Length: 99
Image (cartoon, rainbow, N blue to C red):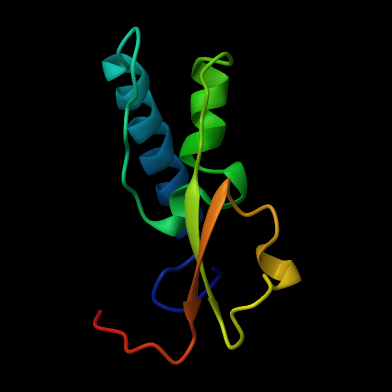
């Protein structure tokens, strides 16, 4: 993410945001049960971002992630998306986007 509108400080800003989100997840984690966190894909893909910080703060915490992958074909997962998350939702690349 060098250059462009994000600049070279963007990865540092994202890391700070991930660390803060993980901090508050741990702070509010129930002693039993499930804590559900919704976040953008860049904050947890490949078990990085928030997931990494959670493991640093509390190594015994169980984490499961969900990611999306856009592909032209839907029958098999493209290699680039393998091991991206525990569950991967494959979305047709031609699907209408409504950002």
